[in-house]
Length: 609
Image (cartoon, rainbow, N blue to C red; front, side, top):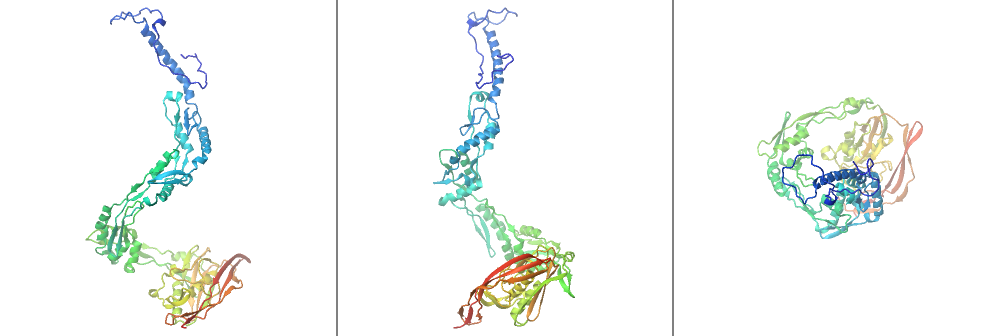
């Protein structure tokens, strides 16, 4: 039964009161009911007790329970109207009884009203210093969707849902990494940077640095403090904490005693089926390191690349380097020079196995694994690159004949580059191709330009070859990637479109921006060097147009101390000029590229007063 028959209580905003069973006064009790069962066997009833009182109380309790259930049925629609329980507020804004979307709109409206306050600097106390943080700098904001979700999930007892109210704290988000950066800058002199553990070698002697903790802020704890107290009235307090490196001082000592010191106590023998190589302690020291990650954890590492450098050419006794296919001219026709596979030590296995034997005093032998290595450019591939005709060529002249040191350097670098194939899309580096150009590589002392004057230096003259190569690729229409003209202009070179080189700082690079391979063919006479580019022609012509020279400057006279290092010069005017590369295809200009350079006036150097 219900209090309203088949109808629910009116659907208004007045809460339905849920009541409990009560005992009515005896005067209101009805006449006694006749007994229908056997006489009770227990004690006689108290004559002063209201007659029929016990039965009436039971009936009323049951009836009121029915009322309670009915009231609950009607009240449930009220208490749970919408997705957010009634009586729920966030930042003083009523969101109870609303759908998620309506609650989110109400909360956003409140945040908009507080926009100035929420964007204001937040006072933060770090140790004994107070600073201010801009919310936008650290991603400090109220997450509306997460806050509404928290309000929906807010738990409350049924009576509390009917009569009570509840406040849900807003969900605040902040970027811990950005906050840490801002706070670390604000810590100031009261903070202390972490001393990372370190193990290095001085020659073959291990050197160690014990770690020390940092005194700084903790990113996660700071973020939590800011999330919890941002909207409060007091400054947010962020504690200073000690951060210890992951590797302790004791662990540093153990690494030195168990690995770093025994690693360089004796050489290691590397054996293969083709022979053996001794790895000296000095090479081990140069390749063994103990890098620390950002937490200060040291991890032993054997760098095989550094080991190879330290061993120099020792591995040549057991390894065979692969040789790329190249091209040569036979009777004026390009012909492939076959590639050759090689054999090379498995670097991963070598690094792993060598690291394993370094702590040992005995049995310091590593079995090297030789793996076949294919050439990067195979014979089959080079024959499919479309290298079939001469695309361009360029010649520069020199004096002194082939007996001079400068001429010998030009011939040497020309030989180093001759027959090189540059694949489509590949970038050619002259320094990368030849490597260091020193005495071991066949180069000689000849004048080079250093600090604006000619001085003796190994490899002088290679800039003339660089200029020759640059012009060859320039007139082939290939892409200029990196070049630098000389500081002074020399009449043996075309102005602006020329290039110097100096290992390793100044390089010359070009990119093969055609769909075909290109071959660099070099040749020389007693007074000239020529570079030809072979491939497949894609342009009708490539020509140069010059602007008039401007900003002419005159050379100064500089007197130098006489001696073998002094090289006299006559001086050359300085000027600025433009060169335009004009590329035509199918009778039309398809590219017009501008090159501009300003030459300094080369001083007239006089050896003596």
